[in-house]
Image 1 (spheres, one colour):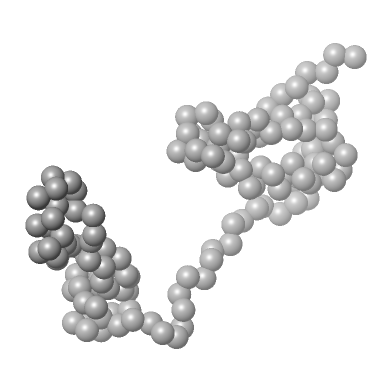
Image 2 (image 1 turned 135 degrees about the horizontal axis):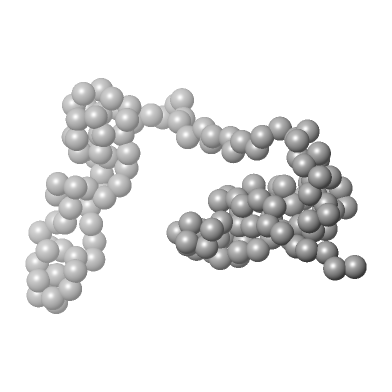
Length: 140
C-alpha cells in the first residue's frame, strides 16, 4: 500500500514539536520530525527553514486531529527571574531595575587603554559595575 507522507504541522519551538510527537508516539501513531536538528543548533535559521515540521501519514490525520483536539494548548511557563531578597537598589533613584554587567561610561581603565594602544589590540579587560535601567546611573 502506498501511503503519502505529509507535513501535519510546523513548529517554531523544537520543544513543543517534541511534546506533540511524544503524544502521537504514545498513541502509537507513526510520525517523525524534520529540520529539528538545524532549528535546535542554529535557532536563527528557524524562520529560514520554515520551522520544525511534524510529518505523518495522510491516512492518520483524522485520528491525530481527535487526539490533539482533546489536549490543551501548549504554553511555555515564564521563569521567575526576580528574587525577593538581596535586591540591588540604585543609589541615585532607588529603583530595583538594576543589572550587573560591563560599564558603559568608564568601560576601560587607563592602564588597559595604554597597553591596548602600545600592543595595537582591542582592549582586553572591561570594567564591570551595576547599571540602573531607569536613570542610567552606574555604581559598584
